[in-house]
Length: 278
Length: 299
Image (tube, rainbow over all chains, first blue to last red; front, side):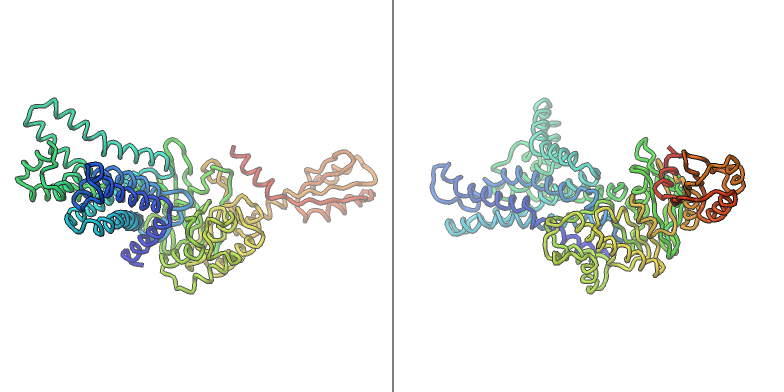
């Protein structure tokens, strides 16, 4: 069997398992309900009635995506990818390289989670389109792409955590939660805290590094840039924009950062797994 | 073939296996015995490339390749100690997945499921299976490729008598085809029934390797004949000494340890002393006692 066929087979198997998993189904349902809720309630809260258009919904959904997608990808990823005695011993004893099996599993999980997110976005999208037309659809679609990229990055991190946690799934889950908390909550507080103690120049450079070093911030900046331009930017994103001489440069830097966050952990995970005793 | 050459494995400060040298040739069935935690599973997992040796090598196939290479695993079928499958897949889906992963013809799926004999449950989710059914499904996956090496970690642990018979047939069939089989078991009946040789590991060290012939000899030596006699001549033990130096009185019984081949001569000697034999019981050496002896010596 070729590496490509083994990869496709493992990906298909993981996709089937993930689609049948209650966790994935629950994620799709919760994501759908929350997206619909945001679409219908955001407008009401701001004094209007009916359903928000795509642009407003996308802007309101950014925070939801940044909170929910990383934690889901990390937890579902670690649960599915941490080698388990009995279940994975048989799989990894087959004449297929460990990295092929790992990458196949990651691809299958990615397809399942992206499908679940597409279901949520799709449900909200149908309602919005039927009520408010297609204004701002581009931003809404860009947010979906951002969600898919964020899913891929955090699945790669889940693979890295799982590859080093053979037979220690609880520890891996705890580490996944810590990773989520640091990336989504603690990192920004820390960076802003330190930046407030520095002078303008060093503070600005720290904020740029912070935006590029944290995939959550990178996705947030890219999504806001695509949906609302620079109007919703905070100090970190504005520093990045100045440093990169405009949106195009910022986009390239952000894409490069996210690519590194995707490839780096996957390569490291494959190396860890190939050296692990299963 | 399977070849462990000074294979050692340490987990932190714990030495799981120490300098194991053992080979299993084509057409040979070898049982790996030992108490829990003696390194049997570690050795088997090293042979299928799941564990990296701390030192030494483990090679598989002919010509031998390091077990860690995926290509070496192409000739291996492995059954883990506690095999598990995703609950949401059916038995058929499990077998079909591994069939495709091994690049085996499609008709092998039905053959493997027939071997598993799941009583019509092959379309049902594995989550509804009993432990024995999961074990049978694991064995079915093992039978998919015509692998030249079978590595089975406690394969009979949860099998019912039907499953046991099917497993025995599988091993006999593979032996007849010239395949190498290495299995661990705590069921000494399996060892007696299947193994050409058995190896005993205690605390990671190989303490004995015995062929069936050597085993039969060792067991025969451990046979005991007990005689109830009409009298107790004082010279009898001296007269028996050249034949059975360990013969002794135990109450009214004359106890004569030694192989079965010795017994007719002992009876002739007893009768020649003018004593009538009123009762006789003979006990052959037991594998479990020999095993305990081997293990006990090393602890």
